[in-house]
Amino acid sequence: MSIAPTKACACAHPESTSAVSRNQSLVRFNGGRSIDMEGRSDQNMDQSDQGAAHVSSRMKISVWPIRRSKLSDQAASRLEVLIRDGTFPAGSVLPSERELMKIFGIGRTSIREALFMLHRAGLVQLSNGERPRVTTPMPEIVIRELAGAARSFLAQPGGVEHFQEARALFEVGVARLAALRRTDEDILRLRAAHEATIAARCDDARFERADVAFHYVLATITRNPIFIAVHDGFVEWLTSQRTVTMRVPGAVEVGLKEHSLILEGVQNGDADAAGQAMESHLRRVAEHFKLATESGV
Image (cartoon, helix red, strand yellow):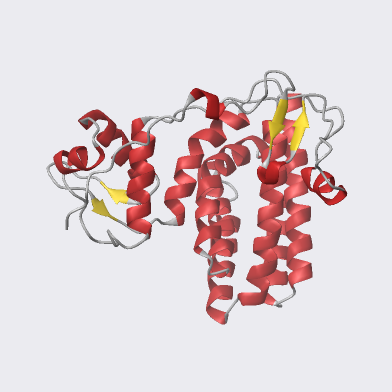
């Protein structure tokens, strides 16, 4: 398969890239509409155009530059197009680095950066001594890439509270869906996970793992791989949070009772009951976390 080398588009003439008139300071939009720097519309705008523009009367536009993207970004974007349109289907190998350098007219470093970006996105598999191979992106790859950003976000002021809110929205939905989709086999697995947490209540390390496993089984019952991947993305934080909340006297026993209610709701196929039980459970976990961190227990 051969691909004709492409040339980068020539830069537009400086006069054609000026969006603001030197004398009238107008920002020109599609269809010839324009708005000056104070947000006033020109006389050519009819009433419907003015409504479509959605521009505040106080809006000011000073600088709005269009920046050139890196060569590696452009190469990655073009390769992604070729992958998604089937030119390079899943399982096929991409041209060698040398061939890609000729195709795009850029250096080896830019090509390697582009391939690494595609690798991180789950589109390409990279192995030493082998040509890049096209792969099908999986949900867990996307979530894994977000894990580092999540850790950084948690360290920011209010990060924990925002994360707890996001987790509650996610897990309440998971509990409701699990109640609607559970099978007899699913109930057996969820009950076994609950019994494992009961058996581990006197062993902190075992209890942490069993507690996370209970929530994992719930995610698998939905049969949605994205939910399972999101749960895996939460695991590191869930474990560290459980370590903190277990310091609160009685927290383990309360958690076990709430797990029992979640199990009951799922087992009965009652989405409302399962969702409410999960919401109550996570609210209590958040309260215990706050108590433990503020009191230093």
